[in-house]
Length: 166
Image (cartoon, rainbow, N blue to C red):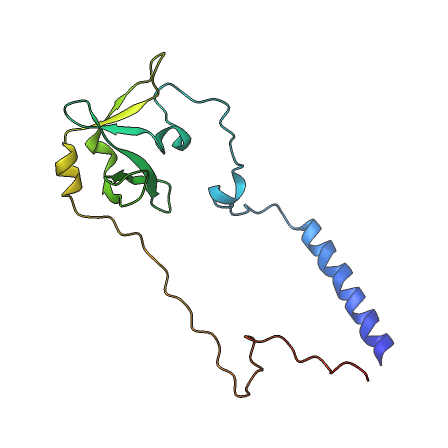
Protein backbone atom coordinates (compact mmCIF):
# COMPACT_ATOMS: atom_id res chain seq x y z
CA UNK A 1 0.00 0.00 0.00
CA UNK A 2 2.76 2.45 1.00
CA UNK A 3 4.78 1.52 -2.09
CA UNK A 4 1.76 2.25 -4.32
CA UNK A 5 1.23 5.65 -2.65
CA UNK A 6 4.89 6.62 -3.12
CA UNK A 7 4.86 5.63 -6.81
CA UNK A 8 1.65 7.59 -7.41
CA UNK A 9 3.04 10.67 -5.66
CA UNK A 10 6.31 10.53 -7.62
CA UNK A 11 4.46 10.12 -10.92
CA UNK A 12 2.18 13.04 -10.16
CA UNK A 13 5.16 15.25 -9.30
CA UNK A 14 6.90 14.37 -12.59
CA UNK A 15 3.79 15.01 -14.66
CA UNK A 16 3.10 18.32 -12.95
CA UNK A 17 6.66 19.60 -13.43
CA UNK A 18 6.57 18.59 -17.13
CA UNK A 19 3.26 20.40 -17.63
CA UNK A 20 4.57 23.54 -15.96
CA UNK A 21 7.73 23.48 -18.09
CA UNK A 22 5.65 23.25 -21.30
CA UNK A 23 3.15 25.95 -20.33
CA UNK A 24 3.59 29.31 -22.10
CA UNK A 25 5.26 32.01 -20.04
CA UNK A 26 2.71 33.87 -18.04
CA UNK A 27 3.32 37.26 -16.56
CA UNK A 28 4.42 36.78 -13.00
CA UNK A 29 3.22 39.42 -10.56
CA UNK A 30 6.07 41.68 -9.57
CA UNK A 31 6.90 41.53 -5.90
CA UNK A 32 6.41 44.69 -3.87
CA UNK A 33 9.25 47.20 -3.97
CA UNK A 34 10.07 46.70 -0.31
CA UNK A 35 11.00 43.06 -0.81
CA UNK A 36 13.17 43.68 -3.89
CA UNK A 37 14.97 46.79 -2.72
CA UNK A 38 18.19 46.37 -0.84
CA UNK A 39 19.43 48.63 1.90
CA UNK A 40 21.29 51.51 0.33
CA UNK A 41 24.31 52.53 2.41
CA UNK A 42 24.98 56.23 2.82
CA UNK A 43 28.68 56.84 2.37
CA UNK A 44 29.07 60.38 3.66
CA UNK A 45 27.33 63.14 5.54
CA UNK A 46 26.26 66.23 3.63
CA UNK A 47 26.74 69.76 4.99
CA UNK A 48 23.01 70.21 5.64
CA UNK A 49 22.72 66.98 7.68
CA UNK A 50 23.25 66.57 11.43
CA UNK A 51 24.37 63.60 13.47
CA UNK A 52 22.45 62.86 16.67
CA UNK A 53 25.78 62.58 18.51
CA UNK A 54 26.48 66.25 17.70
CA UNK A 55 22.99 67.44 18.68
CA UNK A 56 22.67 65.46 21.92
CA UNK A 57 24.65 67.32 24.54
CA UNK A 58 24.80 70.52 22.49
CA UNK A 59 24.49 73.75 24.45
CA UNK A 60 21.24 75.63 24.07
CA UNK A 61 21.60 79.40 24.17
CA UNK A 62 18.85 81.92 24.73
CA UNK A 63 17.90 85.08 22.91
CA UNK A 64 20.67 86.97 24.74
CA UNK A 65 23.33 84.36 23.75
CA UNK A 66 23.73 82.98 27.29
CA UNK A 67 23.65 79.23 27.92
CA UNK A 68 20.21 78.20 29.18
CA UNK A 69 20.46 74.41 28.97
CA UNK A 70 21.59 71.52 26.83
CA UNK A 71 20.00 68.86 24.66
CA UNK A 72 19.57 65.82 26.88
CA UNK A 73 17.67 63.66 24.39
CA UNK A 74 16.02 63.54 20.98
CA UNK A 75 12.50 62.21 20.47
CA UNK A 76 11.72 60.35 17.19
CA UNK A 77 8.63 58.85 15.64
CA UNK A 78 8.88 55.21 14.63
CA UNK A 79 9.42 56.26 11.00
CA UNK A 80 12.50 58.28 11.99
CA UNK A 81 11.02 61.79 11.94
CA UNK A 82 12.41 63.99 14.72
CA UNK A 83 9.60 65.32 16.89
CA UNK A 84 11.50 67.20 19.57
CA UNK A 85 14.80 68.05 21.20
CA UNK A 86 14.56 67.51 24.94
CA UNK A 87 16.37 70.33 26.74
CA UNK A 88 17.56 70.01 30.33
CA UNK A 89 17.24 73.35 32.10
CA UNK A 90 18.00 74.49 35.63
CA UNK A 91 19.64 72.51 38.36
CA UNK A 92 23.32 72.06 39.03
CA UNK A 93 25.34 69.31 37.35
CA UNK A 94 22.12 67.64 36.25
CA UNK A 95 20.64 67.56 39.76
CA UNK A 96 17.30 69.34 39.99
CA UNK A 97 17.13 69.96 36.25
CA UNK A 98 13.85 69.63 34.43
CA UNK A 99 13.34 68.52 30.85
CA UNK A 100 11.39 70.57 28.30
CA UNK A 101 10.69 69.17 24.81
CA UNK A 102 10.58 71.59 21.90
CA UNK A 103 10.16 70.99 18.19
CA UNK A 104 13.30 71.29 16.06
CA UNK A 105 11.71 74.29 14.30
CA UNK A 106 12.04 76.20 17.59
CA UNK A 107 15.83 76.20 17.28
CA UNK A 108 18.32 77.98 15.10
CA UNK A 109 21.60 76.13 14.53
CA UNK A 110 24.72 78.11 15.39
CA UNK A 111 27.54 76.38 13.51
CA UNK A 112 30.74 75.34 15.25
CA UNK A 113 33.83 77.48 14.97
CA UNK A 114 37.50 76.91 15.88
CA UNK A 115 36.94 77.36 19.63
CA UNK A 116 33.37 76.17 20.20
CA UNK A 117 31.16 73.31 19.10
CA UNK A 118 27.75 73.64 17.48
CA UNK A 119 25.01 75.28 19.56
CA UNK A 120 21.27 75.54 19.27
CA UNK A 121 19.76 79.00 19.72
CA UNK A 122 16.29 79.38 21.15
CA UNK A 123 14.16 82.55 21.12
CA UNK A 124 13.47 82.18 24.87
CA UNK A 125 15.15 83.24 28.07
CA UNK A 126 16.27 80.83 30.77
CA UNK A 127 13.32 81.86 32.96
CA UNK A 128 10.84 81.28 30.13
CA UNK A 129 12.32 77.83 29.54
CA UNK A 130 12.21 77.02 33.28
CA UNK A 131 8.52 78.01 33.35
CA UNK A 132 7.63 75.88 30.30
CA UNK A 133 5.71 72.62 30.76
CA UNK A 134 7.90 69.74 31.87
CA UNK A 135 8.42 66.84 29.46
CA UNK A 136 7.45 63.44 30.84
CA UNK A 137 8.71 60.43 28.87
CA UNK A 138 6.38 57.48 28.33
CA UNK A 139 6.89 54.67 30.81
CA UNK A 140 5.63 51.24 29.92
CA UNK A 141 3.36 49.74 32.56
CA UNK A 142 5.12 47.27 34.79
CA UNK A 143 3.97 43.70 34.55
CA UNK A 144 2.80 42.01 37.71
CA UNK A 145 4.80 38.90 38.58
CA UNK A 146 2.95 35.66 38.04
CA UNK A 147 1.28 34.49 41.22
CA UNK A 148 2.10 31.07 42.54
CA UNK A 149 -0.13 28.72 44.46
CA UNK A 150 2.64 27.32 46.60
CA UNK A 151 4.77 29.13 49.09
CA UNK A 152 8.44 29.52 48.26
CA UNK A 153 11.12 29.63 50.92
CA UNK A 154 12.09 33.02 52.26
CA UNK A 155 15.09 34.51 50.46
CA UNK A 156 15.98 37.04 53.13
CA UNK A 157 17.97 34.56 55.24
CA UNK A 158 20.94 32.37 54.52
CA UNK A 159 20.14 28.70 54.00
CA UNK A 160 20.23 26.59 57.13
CA UNK A 161 23.51 24.76 57.63
CA UNK A 162 23.80 21.50 59.52
CA UNK A 163 25.36 21.65 62.99
CA UNK A 164 29.08 20.82 63.17
CA UNK A 165 29.91 17.17 63.93
CA UNK A 166 30.79 16.28 67.58
